[in-house]
Image 1 (cartoon, helix red, strand yellow):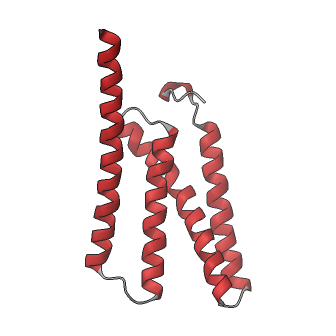
Image 2 (cartoon, rainbow, N blue to C red):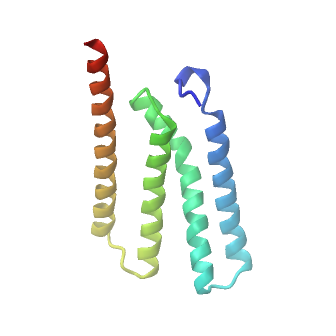
Length: 136
């Protein structure tokens, strides 16, 4: 799938993100209203919560990448959405155990942000290296 910003090539990816979003939030609604809290219910809730966050974060990350970076490969957007979903899962799990504090939340967010920065810098450096090799 070509990732030209002007071609509208994100339609398939957006459809997938909206499918994740609807399945996740719909599943959470059903699970909360129809299931009893058991160990399995927590695991299923975690999966649905991650799916809902991943699908909800994808359009937001697409908009931010197009606004700031002007180029947005779908892999980068999925990875950034995954970081947000992972942060939401960790925060929910820590909150269930009453272990989430503001300092811990900021620390986790900072670590995930630094990991993403390293991935973006690595991709940028690889692109710059390819451009210099083509110029020679």
